[in-house]
Amino acid sequence: MSLDRPSVSGLAIQTQHLSAVLDDALILRDLSVQIPRASWTSIVGPNGAGKSTLLKALAGLMASDGTIQLLGQAVDEISRREKARCLSWLGQSQSAAEDMRVWDVVMLGRLPHQAWLAAPSAEDYAAVEQALRDTQAWQWRERSLAQLSGGERQRVLLARALAVQAEVLLMDEPLANLDPPHQADWMALVRQLVAQGKTVISVLHEISFALQADYLMIMQHGRLVHQGRCKDIESHQALCEVFEHRIAIHPVAGQWVALPN
Ligand code: ADP
Ligand code: MG
Image (cartoon, rainbow, N blue to C red):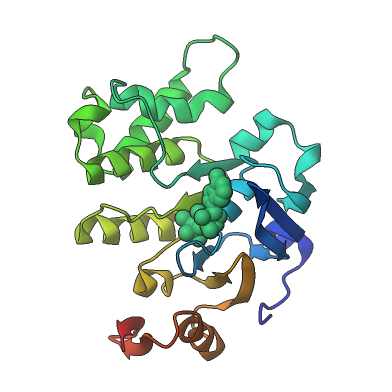
């Protein structure tokens, strides 16, 4: 592993020997990952590699073996509510009630901050408005989810994840259905979050976008096959290998870009 071995307090998430089983099949195999704080990590790998399962395990949405530390603390020692405040999750084809108003969907992100049955606070309103504006979804706030296109809906779900104002954000294929300008906006948003000290972990199939991150984690068959900096040649080699040399990575206009071979 070619990380610069950040101190434990410099890690947003650390796992040791993480494994997970679904329907008697071992889906995550002995994953020991280190995700530095205040940075952007991309997770890539072929379909079925276990990327979504890893994010769900990290978010505590499924049972797993091994240990997970979140912001330097064992997750088992953090209350559900506290965890929901410091970790936000944007799922792949995440379900949401179609007849719900966009505003209310995003307000769901504030639940971990609200007292039981209490009315939303001024802070909650401000966080929802900010999230809707940051994702350019403000104009749809009175519409229901059913009245939105796939990409518009994706932006609303992103707004919900942002409204949590969590320290760590897990996003599973956040660019799905987004047009190129909104993909670029998403990346600008991630950079802004990282500049504010937040940690973003995203599963991406858009390899050229994934390569803009700080760190790359490559998964295959439920295992972590590589973890390193996106700009390192070793990361590029591992990437080409896992995709069976069907892609090649080239420098274009000061960035690394993956093109079909
Ligand atoms: P990725 O996100 O990398 O495409 P997933 O984490 O969704 O992959 O899935 C990893 C593997 O787990 C796949 O082989 C998938 O078929 C399997 N899998 C996913 N969900 C279930 C389930 N509920 N029961 C059994 N196997 C599952
Ligand atoms: Mg997936």
